Image (cartoon, rainbow, N blue to C red; front, side, top):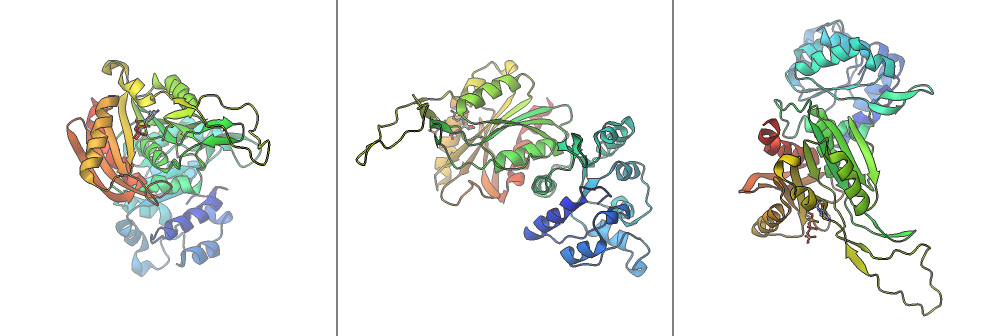
Length: 397
Ligand code: CTP
């Protein structure tokens, strides 16, 4: 990690990687130790920590670290560190190890807006991206002082999901620079009255993984999020909505720009016909609530799928089904794909303790002709990679 104030967030990132069973080695730069000292890193990682190539020379540490790692995550990456990486400088253990690395590399920048937007930094970022190093855009938000803008380090949970994209089914040759990806996620809520809703259990985690993957591969990514309580996915713009009607409007507004629409959200099919303006009260001890009359919500995916192909983005749907039998999953999935005019559809089994809110997923990626990919249980980032693998040919045409 580089020497930025955001280095404190990397302590939680380390903990998260450890909690998911990974063996983590911390390589700080000298200036990062001004913010978080080596004793903190040694205590948290349970390993000795050094910035120098000349400690433990007999083990040739930079060669060992570079060759053995499955993934390098550089977070935070300062403007100075990015410049050194872009020019292949190697004057400490981190920069030497990165030059030795044979694995994917994720760079997560954090700096003041002016430094991020400086043409020197932007040119260095481009150089790294051209070499296949995945550099995500920083978050937009509060920076070290009172200032605010692009340059903030994404939250540890968001960096962890981006890192999973480079591990579970990573697509090293996929380049989505210049593409716009629109993802919907979460579960819509339909008002009964000002304090009560009809909703569902979708957490938004699968949509977050898809948005993270799109950003890692270089796309401009927008997520339309219904009631999702997760930190923004890396490099993505988040538009918050509550109900199906709000989501339909947001999709309409964003669609013109999109090359792909992934409808991952659990959209309520029905809404109360006449939501009460004030809280529904029990007016007596034997009060019996009136039945709630429902009306249909628009089908967002089907409406986009009904457009002529030239006038719509590539279209991916999801079908969460409570089935145990694969034949039925395929039948339901293909039925929805055809009826709604999607190009691909991910059919996945859901149920008690399965998929909703979990960090893993499984399913079938379907195309009009049938199964394109059978995805065994993997992280939600792994499923996102399978989805982009299925779409890549159509996306590049
Ligand atoms: N979908 C949508 N608008 C709706 C309902 C669903 O755009 N009003 C999208 C979902 O985002 C998903 C796909 O359609 O991509 C399938 O959603 P699902 O709820 O599985 O299917 P439904 O058509 O609602 O069918 P059913 O509830 O009868 O299984």
